[in-house]
Amino acid sequence: MIRLSLIGVRVEVPTNQPIVLLREEGGTRFLPIFIGSPEATAIVYALQGMDTPRPMTHDLFKTVLDGLDVTVERVEITSLHDGTFYAEIEFDREGTKSRISSRPSDAIALAVRFGAEVPIYADEAVLDEAGVLFEADEEEHEVEEFREFLDNVTPEDFAQ
Image 1 (cartoon, rainbow, N blue to C red):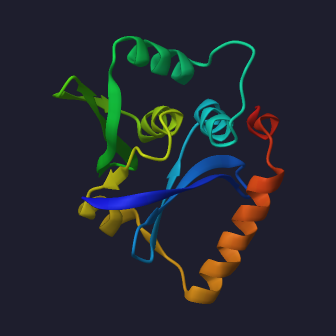
Image 2 (cartoon, rainbow, N blue to C red; image 1 turned 180 degrees about the horizontal axis):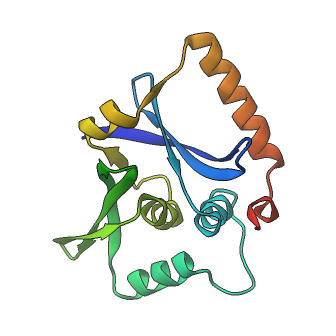
């Protein structure tokens, strides 16, 4: 498994499809994953520390896990089949580990609610198949554009 850093969420032009963008730690590959608008909103809300008037699904799930003394240990993007990514969430409850299957977007939306300490990993085969390389200059430009996007994005930008 290769550890990834969550860069954030952006909207792909011209399709206006949200993507979550991950980067290989200590490497040069990026992993873009197309996600739905509700999941994009959930991730952006958590990254920006925004509270909603009523709990979103991922907030509710975290509250339940907290009440059961369960922590999210890690997220793993395990495979890619026919353009669909698969992930697993690893939980810990009093030393007992368990795993459940998840969409990567839901796993990430839950993980960011537990803070930066929840690592995200991808199988090497997933990065080999779907990873994208950027040249250094292009990468710096992309990262700067993405930071500018994050500074200006609002959850309403993901409304359909």
